Length: 102
Image (tube, rainbow, N blue to C red):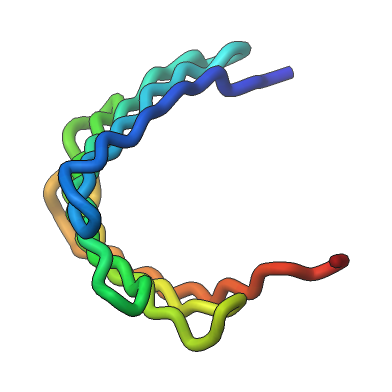
């Protein structure tokens, strides 16, 4: 059995800029800890641009991304993340639809 224990916080610098931090620890076989620090910028239309660094067992992982809102309950997420060994860049794409079952 495994579980993740995590905590985080958000510090608003002004209406458009914020810093976010998350810290977590796995409980169970193969314990590992992780931490993420992100700089966030939100424009007038709720679109979000972020830069983050994540501390993982193999090293520090930098990433940049964008959340673009298509409608009040749908967004596209684009992200580029370097692997923890400093090698290839991993592109990521997601379509997020919120509000099912309401």
